[in-house]
Length: 427
Ligand code: RM4
Ligand code: MN
Ligand code: MN
Image 1 (cartoon, protein in one colour):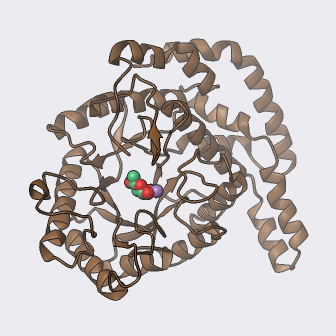
Image 2 (cartoon, protein in one colour):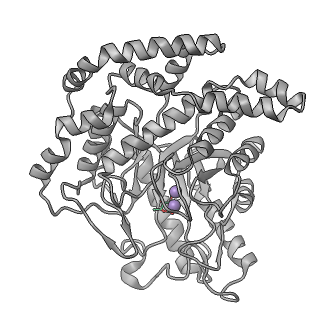
């Protein structure tokens, strides 16, 4: 584990500069009517879950280049998330993907995580790959879909897998299941849009009935991949229809990479929130498709606008949704990528919190697009990093998490401990 005194030791020489930057920024913000203390407080409460498949090197269709020292057991993954959280102070929970992680003793795993200050967020089921334990040694296959399948025995296996994931999640203290389906078709005529949708809706209803009363079910849409002609839950409209058809505790989950090019994602967020059906987020960034790049690395302005809509949905506060990072780390050390992403989310949230929302409303009423945009730019173009560092400091985390991660030699230690040829489960 990354000791807190080791982090404090790294923070010590950075403290004087940080204090002065934070104070100066506080004065600048105060002149504009914003309260640095309030923003830092809100940032210190922010948390985004880390999925258990994020600690290994991701692959592309063309290859995978593991760097060694990757976690193999679920406990080792939790160790890495604990190290991440120690540095950022903002990754308080783990999201398991079953069967990539399928603990034999969930009660012991829950305790293991608790001892490291972590809880379990939404569970993720996987019916986009064949799973030997529910697909009876290859007799049942998800090649042509899972809940949408024309064969009832395949649908039954997929429902059973989701029930299994819910039962596992109950033992871990999770309160939700996220269902992303690869279901769809790759060729026109291959399946019926309507028939597939109705079967998915029926399947989700059955899974919903298997959930405890305090659980939520999230439907995650995605336009294409691996289905290349049609995907059953392709867009926010389909996701909304599914969530509305399933029940009150079925909500939509927005993955930032799951939209067709140029989609106005912040407007999607607003619409779903307006319908009372916004349930969660998967953060990442993309240039072309579901690239799963570091959050905020390509479209930071979009990320800021998304957070602004979230604050709108929460009446000025961040609504309590299932926030999770969903990235693929092909080139970077996964932990460094996760640190950068968490930092980017906190920066975007800080900027959004600095927007004078009452003045923005007034500019909108007055039909003054220039002033409205100026109000956004004033917040977006300011350097809010001292606020984020202050939030980390208040959580006992690192002023500069990347530099601290490198200085403590975490990866080197894991390479020595786990070896240079370990490969984590995932894609
Ligand atoms: C999908 C989607 C899901 C994730 C899988 C691995 O594209 O984003 O959320 O669980 O990838
Ligand atoms: Mn996702
Ligand atoms: Mn994705």
